[in-house]
Image (tube, rainbow, N blue to C red; front, side):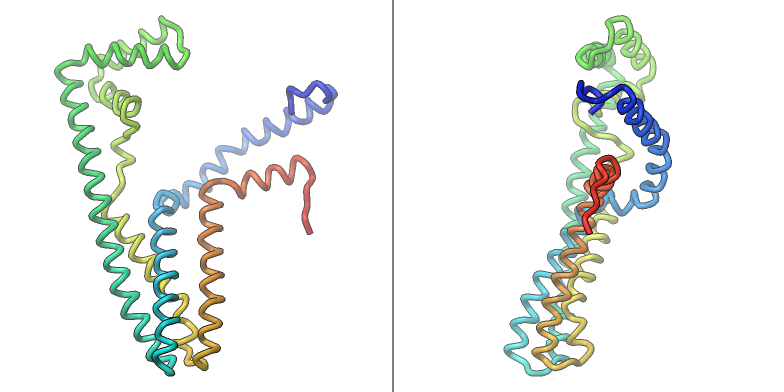
Length: 245
């Protein structure tokens, strides 16, 4: 918009002020977002667990409704299946994350060893990476030489540039398993609520479907928040004065 020739100088000045305000407040927004960083880092496990729990238990309870006339028996059957499913999903997520972490740790270990014994090779690579990014030849050389003196920094740059890995960002297998299993159980419990309340069987069935749809909308909201689409929508609304009522 700032590069649009149809805008007047005054309009561009106003847009620049808006941009300056956004950049000044960006740090505050980052601080607020950091409060939920742990959760957002495990959004994949959260959505996977909750969706699986919802769909599987909803399928099970719908089938049990046809077999049993008692809401309690449907709730009990769904709870047993949900508990077993949560354990299975949690253990599976833990094993998967553990295997992936071991592979990444192996790569990082290899880079550290190579940084210790053949640092000159990595120094030349870093020089090339910096040049490709657009840095000047002298600055690229300085960065390469500086990293050459610090083997920890050298291995960190190579790991990030060549493999996209950061040691501090490696996924925790335990947390992955906990998030997947916990949210599977939460998702599984939602369709069971009407049956636990002892409502008539067919009313429970209808409410179970409604609760499942509402829970699925929550997972969609979580995805939207984690992808920053909500923020984009709010910014667009403010900039263009859009308001849907």
